Length: 336
Image (cartoon, rainbow, N blue to C red; front, side):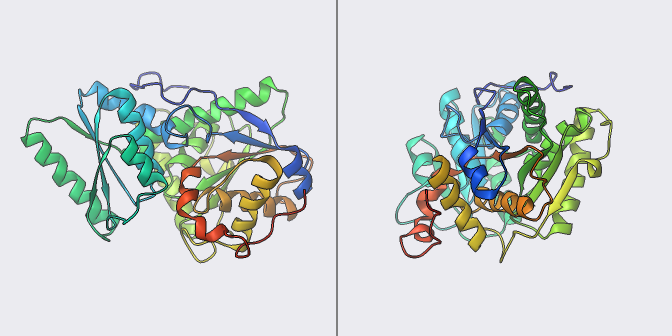
């Protein structure tokens, strides 16, 4: 993998576990369902953003940064893991949230506070306005003699999941799993695009099913292709095959939109927890897992071909989603 020239700081205790899901597989009628446990990492309660942060903070340290800035909503997993990684590296951390300050800190917000991050609340502005506020803050800090680094360079962060594709391929080969299908979340693009880039560098060992949780299918496909090109430009390598040879984008599981539950996503959370003791949250991972089940049931992932669900983490956000899962309000879990 041609990524060794990029500064990188180890944060994610890799490789993460590749685990068979026999009881969940029995439930959905597929006996070769696997899960890649990027939710299980030693730092900050884990999650996909730690792979990104290895490259972001590698670059920050390379530039001599003494402070990092990150932005997101109150329950942003990226903010939580930035706060945790900054604490580990001894960097000051300022988080900018485009919401009002909550009356009660819970979920990721509580963890940010415990990690020592400073949170700024700028009200319900859009992402473009939020980005401008972060840039303005960075300029102010530089005038004060500080050296801030803004977290979020998407092509650079995506290199973490280019590595993840190689890691999963090596694990599957080591366990003699003929892995044919990978199911991964599709949101703003860097996680899935990075994984797709890594897959093409490996000469397409598996088909990658990208489940949209934020955008309609055509928009997400365009985002992924654009991000794929930016990663290729950054690395300076032309993959051996095109992104369309390894990518299937599916927008059928988005429901009413980003962060809004569907019956299938709620059921997926109950099913995985009650059959395997593994937790997924509502915004990203439960919709992705619900998509995997439907793809199996519809035959788009054949029952005789191994499939891996990439668990990108985010379970701490569950504690801010409690109203969705109260007894009597959500779907019942299947019998044990």
